[in-house]
Every structure is written in structure tokens, then in C-alpha cells.
Amino acid sequence: MPPAAAPVMPLKHTPTADLEKLALEHIVPRLLSKGFCYLDNVLGEEVGERVLEQVSQLHKEGALKDGRLAGNLQGVSKSHLRGDKITWVAGTEEGCEAIGLVLSVIDRLVVLCGNRLGNYYVKERSKAMVACYPGNGAGYVRHVDNPTGDGRCITCIYYLNKDWNAKVHGGILRIFPEGGPNVADIEPLFDRLLFFWSDRRNPHEVQPSYATRYALTVWYFDAKERAAAKQKFKRLIESKEEPATKDS
Image 1: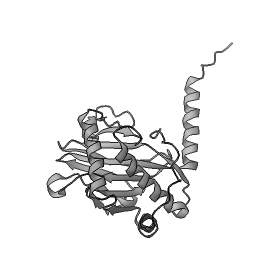
Image 2: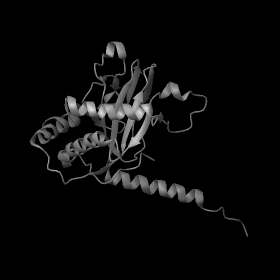
Image 3: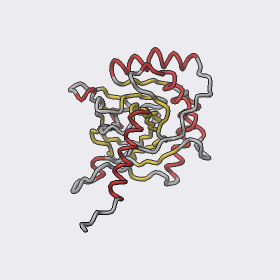
Image 4: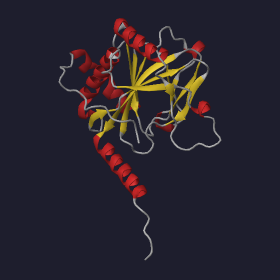
């Protein structure tokens, strides 16, 4: 199953005109035409610094653990496939207030996109996955976030890496739109926010990182697909719990 959903996205805040412009003039048209979109200087230097401090503190405290892989990959070193360390944050925890602010801004942008993103109906998201690639050449091999219809429809990543030089530090997120031969290379620059479809339209990889690389990722769920995935999971669990019938 995909990550547990956070509470229903807050709608009580009045969006600013700037956020509405970003949503309608940048995010919507680029997602529909290219399948991905990124925005720079989203929160500004001061707020971005506070988020970076909080993420760095989580790392120093040992809160980040090795990222998990789906499936049973016998004979394959996990670190060769995925080398990040992660933790899940709601943004309401003490010491995570700035992370919560990032999430509220992303929520508002997604809400402002409304029903303009095809047939998706988004009303909830995951918690934030705080991720660190420790700078030892770790990366994440090519994969799809939602290959099985688990409900995730939009992936959002907020980057926190100051003075990042991809030629020296690596760490590029390479997207293969529609799984084709063309690629889009996204550098994980400080205060950059990336959106892309979570399904098979966007296989992607994190190339080896040679400096500490931080990011926050959240996934937004399509309500109908999410409900179907939960039902499928529930039936699977129930089938495993049913006692075997015995011949009389």
C-alpha cells in the first residue's frame, strides 16, 4: 500500500493571487503538456533556511532511516537500488513548523489547480517524506512512484540544497516522460518545487549524489483510485485471514 494519508487537505486559508497565478498559468498547463513542472524561489530565502534547519536537525538526531523497497528482490543489494534515508513528517510536530508551512503552500497550489488536471479528484495526500542522500554516491534507480494504481496521482518534491552544482555534486532527478527516449534533468536546487504525474507516464531516477542532498516529497491521491486500492488491499488481507476449509 502507498504511504498513509495525512488529514484531509485544509481549505480554510484564502489563497494569494500569486499562488493562483502560479497554479493556473504554470502548473496546470505544464503538467498537461509535459507531465511535469517546477517552480523556483517558492518560499524565499528566509523560510527555506528554516525548513533546511529543521530537516538537518532531524538528520542529526538520527530520525532518518534507510528507505524501503517494494517487493522481494533476492540477491540484489538494496543500497545499489535506493540509497536514501527517510522519515515521515506531518508538519504538526514540535520543531517541524516550517515543514508544515511548506506543506500548506503545496496544498493550496494543488487545491487551486482544482478540476483542471483531467479526471482527478484530490482531497488528501500523504505525510511528507523527508529524504537525505548522504553524499556517498547514493542514488535511486529508475522507477515509477505508482505503477499499480495505489491512488497516488501527483508527486511534489521540495528541494533544500544550497549552492548545489550538479556537475560536481550530481544528484539530478532524471525524468523519462511517457517512458520515452527524451529526458528531463531536474537539479535539486534550494527552494525549488517540482510537480509530476506519479503513474507510469513518468519513470524517473535520482542520479548518484556526492554531497548531502535533502528533499521533501508528498503524494496527492485521486479519491476514486485511492478508495479502490484500499478495497483491494482489504480483500487481500481478508483472504489471507480466512481459515482453510476442511473436507468433511
